[in-house]
Amino acid sequence: MKHLLVLFVMLSSNQQCNDEGQLNIKRATSQSWSGGAAATRGTYYHLYLAMTMNADYKFDSLWVNDHRVAVEVMRGNSSNDSVHLYANDRLGIQMPGSSYDPSKSAEANFPVASNAEGLLGYYYKGTRKYYPVAAFEKLEAIAYQ
Image (cartoon, rainbow, N blue to C red; front, side, top):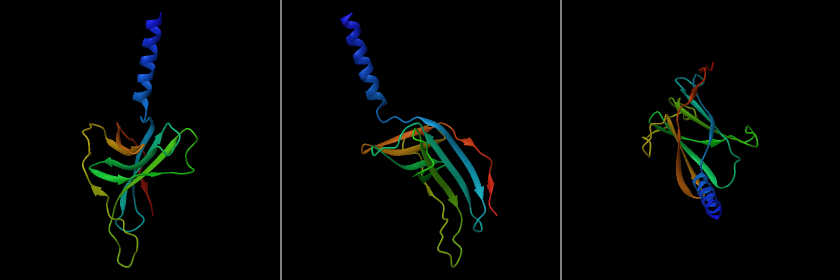
């Protein structure tokens, strides 16, 4: 009986170590858009993580379609048990006389090998980590006027 108890404690403590810093994506969506400033288009990406935001995590990049796109945490849109991340992979030209520069995101391959559709880059307690996004749910395109 003592051996089973020791084995159970060892297995459960190992599980906690493996779970530390792991993410759980509840939903991942992509939505192409076009319009607004002349010749501007892109894709919105939204990731919903099953977690509460804390200082241990810093999300910074999403690699998708051979681009590295900056990621932002959407404050005020998330429930207490989820974190909403947003990225906008845009492409356009800067119009003369305009201060808005819709230049495209940086072209970049995945920094680690993955067969996923996307790769989320983040820091957990100061250590660089990546989480594969298997697939994005494609939403209906938006056409701005």
